[in-house]
Length: 245
Image (cartoon, rainbow, N blue to C red; front, side, top):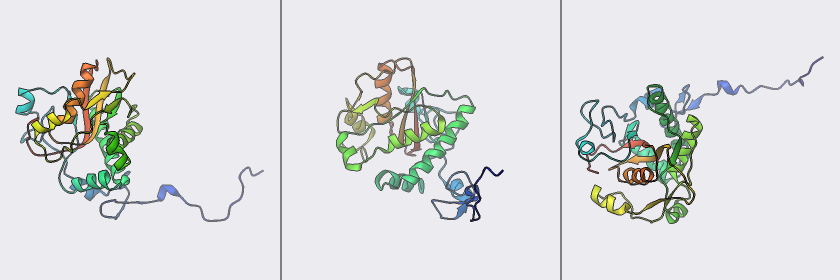
């Protein structure tokens, strides 16, 4: 007795399907849609500040600004510096709705985080994407930080909450501003959503790029004041310029 229906047509074996690299379009057998040569050419962040991830000449150091004025967040985890071709990939994801590129970068970030967790980095209780102002969200149609947080949540099995934080002031664009102007720009810009509770939790703020750290610092101060036990920052890239917070 045959329990399965007979089928004489060709069978599609999806396990043998080869992906194509999103950067060079060559076939790749890697788990992600990027070939090994292109992945190796990404601007990987090597030696950096143990706190804010600012690129430094040697490993195991803390930058002068973090020593002088320790930030409210505990540590920044970031795999790349904001240089070509990564800057182009993030721009296309962020401003041109090329979401497969964002998904690829999010999966590679999740892979880097898993390695750090295996080496002793504490796992957070909750992922919180940097919120966008309502007007800007309507204009763009999506929040790239929220998309990254949700992809990380799926890969790392850590819950993400894109409604915990709110941007209550539509601040000026941060690009082109120095560190002091960024801090002024972000004063009173964020708030916890009504009913949100973070007391005693280890939180990770998720964003695409860390420049001066002004946004991360503002959010971390808010969360620590609300009772969070620890705040880390996860992002795709760190700018190499030694700008003061």
